[in-house]
Image (tube, rainbow, N blue to C red):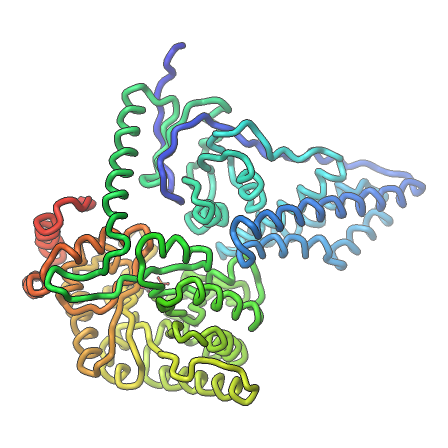
Length: 583
Ligand code: PEP
Ligand code: MG
């Protein structure tokens, strides 16, 4: 057979892994909607058709919900409960039925017109969260219309394929997962889109944001999907296939080698022990975290629970989530961060601001919403009976906030005590140091809390005045900037002066080039994304603490970030030559 020209496309890596397989191009059923007049006699029959279709749509979604609960867990499956709720929206369906009666038009036309109104409003929003939600509404709309038109749902295909689609709804992703899906590629979507999050949970390699890949690929085309680099190769040549096979094998060997360290402690050659834990967003990640050899969870971003919903989870719901994580991680600890809403993590009812990163965010929102804050603290406390939960507050910028937040903890404890509910009376309370003001007064804060955790993602952006998500200034976002390093040294010193531990949960903790520096500065805990954990452990286990201290001392004396990076890279290569460092 003639070799077609090889083509390469770059997207956004959404879930890791390398696969080679045939494409299955999934073109969504786009319903054809014609406006038809019906006679007054036909009105009742049309309404019946609508009700029947809504009933079938609900049955389909119940099935998806059940499957989702098994595959990705109860909390994440809630996206589908929200879709089922749209189907029982009395106001919406009242309006649709009224229009059928008044206008004497076919049901699918009216359903399309009414639901599209909501969807347009959501799509026009400048808020990414709302725009993502509009896809859920569209999914419900198309589901009803497909059922009115009595079309079958296609979600099964011959196995062992890579699904290529314009976009995938959460329901598509779940339904496809019943087949042998080896990977997902989508034209649209960012790393935080639902399809990307679900692919990661399902551990299926995925790339999103591939623009118009569906126009370039047909079912049956040979593909290579590199979910580490975000690269897709269409019609790969023999040579490319060999190169990817080799890369895949190398990654497998490398991961296997690192995996051998899984049950060994994160300890330097001369016996200095540090905590090596993970950052997670969902309870389902805990098993994976443990399989990577983590000591626990150094940051649980509780906002994962708010995904796909527009109201706060109840105390009971939150308790179930925190409890599940605490039980799965036991005997290791879990640091639960109270909701960090605002900034780039927009929640439905937080309105838009001119400067969201300098606005109503993190602890500021919690302190302004005593009821929700208390509810969250009570849920966290209730889940703390095994004494492996710590709690911490994000975006703190003053001592007053720390004191007020602690008062809320005391209030939550008092209310539980009066109800006779058990909890950890000595629960450890900490603060994230991610605002320069908090870094400067780290000593004062340290006097009043049990631990500190450095959030470099925000600390760097606020310290250097560089928006963490702005491509235009990304060159200026430098973790090895002398100002950043000196601030980190100051925070660690202040914490130790007051005899409390200090960790880091920002991405810098998971950068292998930074490991020697942070270790040498005396950091007590590294909380990193689970996939990088073995590499960080390898570096820690390859050096003497004394030597790391020397490296840190020298690094901090340089006057530019470039010099520091070069110096640290050379030292890391010398100490742990098997580690792959990104150049
Ligand atoms: C940080 O700012 O470093 C951090 C860990 O928090 P987030 O990335 O969730 O803002
Ligand atoms: Mg932060």
